Length: 435
Ligand code: CMX
Image 1 (tube, rainbow, N blue to C red):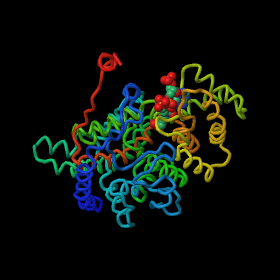
Image 2: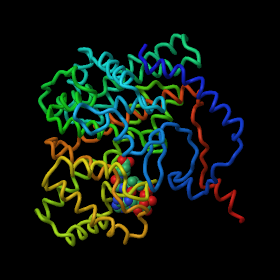
Image 3: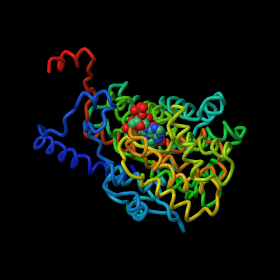
Image 4: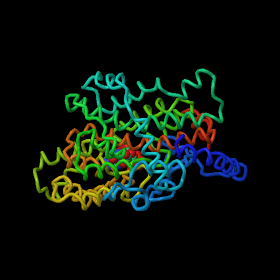
């Protein structure tokens, strides 16, 4: 067994006891009230999920195991001469709450290398997927294909595993899924966009660096870009569509492949992860219509026209955040360090100044500030990845880290099947009609 599993074995009973204790002491405390408005309005500010690895603050943004994005960047392991955090280290942190030692970090890296091979049937499956399918659909389909390898599902089917062992089987599946994911995702890219010319893994590279390599982007800067990208998108507490879906489906004891395939389907929605693809489309359309060197006034008009047409400004707004997303800032700073005078990067910076004041004039928009998707695609575009339909797949490779860490803990905590109540219009009228 790897060091991470050993550490989890030590931690699981300790944290189980802490949760039992918290439940005994605080189980009857009220977290919040739920209004009819909230039930109809997408459950905003209804705190009804237990999701331990990360927490989102409306003002200051995400913390993963209590560390914000700049702290993660500072404390997590980096590549040689690199500045960006490495996802292997982040996964250790998400699972254990501690920063890994060099040895622990190297052990996760090694395990993912060992578990990451794709057999020839899997490769063939990907190369046979219809090219006109969206790459997110291809990713979800490949996860479902791999589901036959689920050790949890096999063990459960044979009646071999009891409840206290669930998490260990989820752990094995999660580690295999994460190890394979960059290879699957890169192969989808090469199949759809590069005539199926597959690039083999470079075993000397880290998880994210290798992903860049297999995609066909070999500059150190691109590897750095992906290291940061895959770290900052990993977790965004439990209520967002991809994390919540994975958690919900997993609560029915659907194995990690089934659960994450479902999460990926949610991430593929334009109001969620697909927004990074939409941002690029929107920026390019604006440049096509208005040319280079667009004035602030022209951008303002373009924003208002987009909204008048009943469309949203992709990359702006958020269901929880009320200020600029720190992940956006992280990417903006990355661009400032590495990229000089790229027209789209400059346009993104200009939009950051121009768009929020315009959105503020539209009363109903709760958050006029940019989210992570306003910047991420622009970086990939700069480095030559022009196929913006693919961008959400990169997001999905990252989000798997958070979803898998939480899924393992959900089983370790023995959380039950999720089953909130729902109400009907008649129910509302009957209950409150006379008041
Ligand atoms: N452009 C135009 N209108 C917007 C808007 C935007 N960027 N953000 C919010 N609004 C509108 C909403 O569509 C809603 O309009 P209606 O009442 O007519 O339906 C109104 O303002 C109120 O919405 P809200 O309470 O501010 O925001 P929600 O919590 O309902 O939605 C989000 C949040 C992210 C879906 C929304 O801001 C949006 O559509 N943004 C653009 C898409 C995007 O960037 N998504 C990525 C989010 C991050 C991620 O998950 O990856």
